[in-house]
Amino acid sequence: MYFCHFSGNFSENFISLPVWVEKGGQPSVIEKLNVVKFGGSSIRDSFWSALKLVEYLYESSNLVVVVSALRGVTEDLLLLAATRDREVLERISHQHLRLASRVGAEVENLLSELEKALNLPKTPEAEEYILSFGERLSAEIFAKALQNEGIEAVPIDARNFLMLRGCLGNAGIDYYASAPYVRKLGELAEEAVPVVTGFIGNLRGKTATLGRGGSDYTASAIGAILGANAVLIMSDVEGIYTADPRLVPRAKLIPFLSRERALMAAKLGMKALHPKTLEPLNGIPLFLGKTETWRLGTLVAEFGEEWPIVVHRVRNGFGEIAVVGRGYVRGFTPVERGWNYSLFRVPVEELPDAVNEIHEVVVNEGLSSSDHSELWARV
Image 1: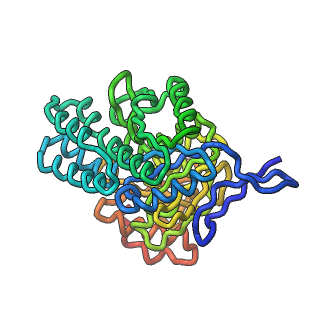
Image 2: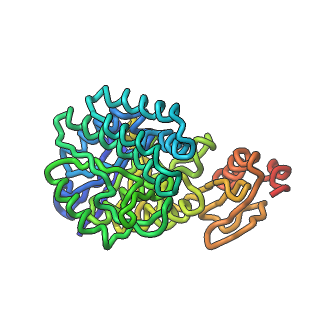
């Protein structure tokens, strides 16, 4: 019989992967593969912390690393695809050449390929192709940095093994078609660290993207097909909070969260995870943590604590606020109520204040809702 022990700390606030303990025996880390995904903020702002984290994990486990584009680059690539503005191209090139020069990576060929792509007709296919360069450049640079640290690493283009279905811009992963290729990736991980491009794949021979935040989805799909020990999603925040901590300063970190509740929150607008990330991970734990400090703040598994989560998004010209885990919110009338959630709608300009106020009512039960009547009279 086995059980899983999780700790958010290890040796002065470093991380601890799941330790599986055989009843009556001694703790030991199972020699299985782990998948680690680094978001764009990690690659841009915490590059060296990400690098050292991979070194640390590699000492005890085989790894597959998944990388996003540098933070802000996908937006620039979207702009480039729409305008073909050479100044935008120069900005993208300068940012990557500067980082590449620090580790000795060669990215000139990729940047030259990107420049040639500007001559393509403005079609959805061309836009998807142009968007692929963010992750491809990140993988090349990060793999070279690992090689400099004495770790055999190989940049891997996910278009060579991740087969997709659906439509351009928001494709889904075809697990059956991808499995033979992904297993080859697992075999490679026995000899080296594959550094895989997130966000992109192969849709009937064409480049396609998985939608915003799709690198999370890439990581979970690889983890599911390979039967990984764990999937880690590393970013610039410690985990999943009761609301977006960038918008709600008093948001509380949720240490343990059920897969079901996290999935519902993601579908209703939570930005911490791509909505499809959790679908394939039956029984595989998902950890979310902060790259800079190596802190794992949230474990998503089959069972978790019953914290409510306040999520928000802009949709159809309005701000939408969903409270996951509460079918009823004291004092407020929702525009929609579903199983274990309620949905409110506000003018976009009032969204930040509204999210903070609903969070106060839902999470801090001691606060009176009377102070919020003027704002919410318009909801």
